[in-house]
Image (cartoon, rainbow, N blue to C red):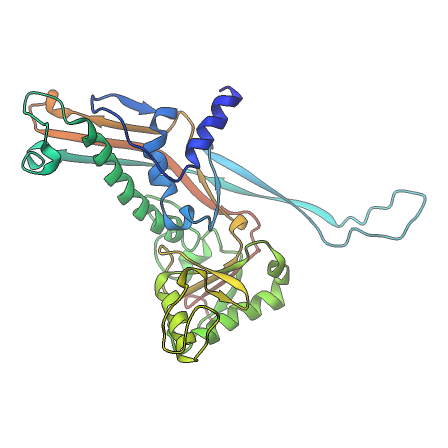
Length: 336
């Protein structure tokens, strides 16, 4: 692929507004041509769309994430070369899981609606119907993917918090964040004790992985329910970080902080879970912009006597941490 073409593809992939402008004719949209549809599905999960993770596109089956660490490289001066032997390399492997969308809709259910304008039993579907159908499917796929990249389970494979969709220690021990420092929450999170639990996570960062405190973008990750507990706790305490008043009025709910560290709301995370890490350390990989992505609308009514249209998408995703130990994982699943 020519460099200028690849740059154009990636520019399209990073565009947060996607225009759907195909005609439904049974063609296959693969590689570059599938980009608007598959991109809408892969770029729209909240965690990805808001930049709370690092995204790697153009992967085939896997990617090796290399890291170099050096803590004390300075040694006493001498005429000979004298290595401190303090620089090391490590790697993490991100493996993609192949996924697909197979959906079917009957034209007969569309005729009585506004979407059926311009349709007839003997002709093609209206030109904008393909846009609408693929747009709806991409939106639903994005919502499902938001949960999958965090919780794992079939068909997604390993997630950041679990590998089997179950919120327990077995799943967490096989997750992408399995090597993070563990913080055990004694009870389910609530507004009455959320400040104590966040302090436990912060204290673990300060004592065990203090280097995280200077990482760009380092902050707390939690779902909307846990985030709500934090706002309630601040309101009850009469706090006003420029955001919440004592009456509980939220003035700027998307920019809440804890000791100056941002709080990232990720709807796909489990309840009773708080992470502390940074966006560059949570890696979301896709095969976007490769010839292995595909989006198709199949007018099966033309071939099998039915009244159906099928929508097909094929793509692959995976998650991994860049530095296995760069984080704190607070949860009720850990043994005390």
